[in-house]
Image (cartoon, rainbow, N blue to C red; front, side, top):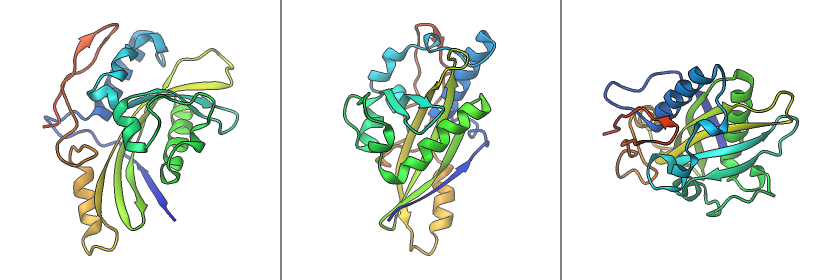
Length: 209
């Protein structure tokens, strides 16, 4: 049995570090300022989601605003690897049938929060898998849709790493410290921080090193 313990984080990234969650929020706000509200899909260059790098951790969700049949429209290779998803999204299957059970509350809550707020929702936290702690960072940002549309669009990013065992004496301290550091899924190095300027967007630059 697994448990999910998400919590909302509004703390800025440390000076000198710009995580992908912060880069995505900054990019969304840049485009929202130009559009006067949540930006449309056309404001972003989604070809980069299929290229290794920061966009590989990102995803786009078609959120069912009247139920729970949320579906993935696209996601990067790193995102798929982290969650054990197929290389290409299954448009006919709701993500509740695809995501690992321990992450379903995170993605369901993230979609709901982003739509309700009309702004990006940052959710950092951890889940348990057979006593092993997995830490994650994520952002869910709403995109513009037609008025009264039964579906919403969510642009997001997700990353995770393995943390301490739940029964370790200093597990709480380790969780706090690890969530304050840049990380990759394998824990070997920070998330890539180099950004390129191309297409209709000019993504903020930064480094996780």
